[in-house]
Image (cartoon, rainbow, N blue to C red; front, side, top):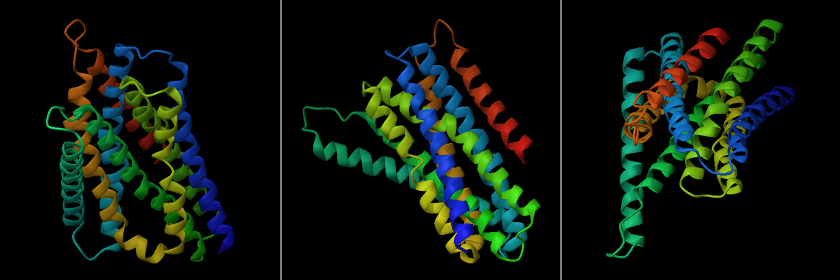
Length: 267
């Protein structure tokens, strides 16, 4: 059992390190380039939309069909709606809190609210991903410790790690755009992936129970990601695009295509 926990911890530390690597891209930019940042925001939106289906909803439906007595469509729909409602409520709470902090003469910084929502949504998204890696390694304890099962768990960790790279950049670059230092942007960007090792170990320890709730958790994360991508990232990346109206749009298309390619290719 200790070996399985160690492998899951090592795998999720790896996925966290890829998030940090993506966040480190902010170090290479002394001053934010608006066109590049719009492209990256569009790319992040495309990644989040694609990941919502290929990495979250589709696995949620498949797991619900295999392990749950509740209809898979109901599990996915309820989780998706609760994820979106959770992010909507979070936005309202953040807005209310900031209005309480600011005086009546100051307008709340809505752009900062968007950054908080982005960090929160990606962090929520990373929790079920860490659980998924933990569950994959946890199943090895149940008499399935074969090379095929081990490679399957490693493949899941690799796939999640690869998609974490643009997610780290999707947090750090917008923070840099808002005037944060490169160091603070990097630290906050990589911090969104810190939950994965914790969730990975929890997935191993509670594999029997997590197997039952994982479909709901995956669809919950999908709802949160879709709301942020559609409500915040896509409108933001389309601002000031009068000269090149398709620049950010192609970032969305590219992000979706890359995420879809990685998820389908890695299975």
